[in-house]
Length: 296
Length: 296
Image: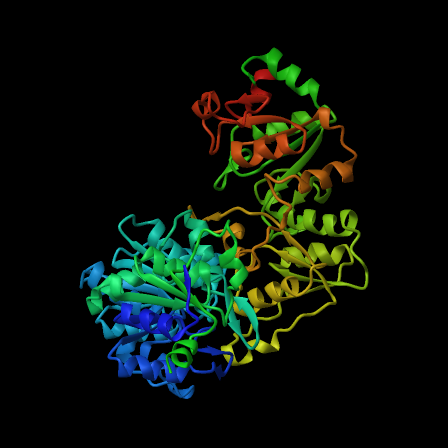
């Protein structure tokens, strides 16, 4: 574990990697404010020919929707540089699971997830449907459907019991039906506070089934597998940059990458100094912007 | 552990107790069919002056609603003989928590729960309200409310994200706000199959909070505490009768009662014979009706 505090250390760090994966909130920005030196650091990396990827667990946004968010923060990016859990899920279903073309996906989620699944030519149902309430007398209209080859669980603010009962029934009745979660963040930060997150609102299906899903998002490994597969990355020359030990840094470690912790977000220096802390980054710095400031 | 197979064993068993608590499904009936000898056994107990209580985890029904169900099965009962998790919750909030009269309860549940809470003069909100959907832009209309002294989680087929976010926010923002679940059955049996149960659909609130609730229903202890408190029962002369080791029998054991397992439901004889089975009833019988048939 090495702290980056000098020009030499910053330059050595930059020379060690070809690709940088960035968590966004707490690394690039805080609330609506882009952190000092972040734009300059990203420009420096581009000048040096590095590959930049923005990695997010948010499953409600497609890559093009997330691009608009980056652009609204005046951060340059292209769709191809964005890897969200919605896209990762679509990529995984298409390219890793080799999903059969005669099967459908039942998705519990938002339109960003639908957009990414449809872009991969996956036959998806559930999103934007099943909005009408249900009662005890009509519950038996929900029946097994063996055309459903996978149930995908993401963030769905339009959730209801009908959707839970369908997602449950399709997996419960069919041992061949895959069960995939976009991510398991238990809370969703917005408006300066938190509300129940994806990991919370998908738990009814998992609790009723008594079964764990394949989880795409940080800190689980599948999203890194997708990223490495898509861009043919050399893991030894790829660094995951984040502000949380138990999501971002663990994600990098689980995926076999090197890691950089920045101290502008959740995890503090004393946490990584704690001898009982099992998750340690390879590098850490006070802020991402230090890479630019130190190397000038 | 003693199996009841003779007239003498049946009579000795009956003479040992003054009060019998009955689980219903799998003990009294199966689907819509009352099991053989059940009505006769209940009559015999009444003739002998025994107290009979029907105990159910179903939180959607008030006692008067559950009485109608018993009557529809031609099983004699009075409201006072019924103890469901909705009533147990109301009793617990009123008599064990001594809930302050200037505070309100936010309930996530069905009208049976509302009926029981209001019958105990508890100021309840949430049920029948909050049915309109919510979106990301209006999430910040959900704010802490320090007039809410307890959040109660039961089965609510009209669930939505607005209700989850409210229940979460009231507890998350206020360490003094109590958190109570009517029961934690992970599945709900109906129409010959199962759908997500109370334990499943309340899990978003618990997962987001990272906190356990006080659980009223079987196999937890609070419902027995309420029953013993209300009827001033002698635990040594009270027997819990059920068909499931991990709910009914564990409930009796947790509450310090004696237990009878009947083999007409979920748990089979080989399970209780298994040396590694940690939960053993004091008595078991092939069927509740045997108490009548053997003693004739």
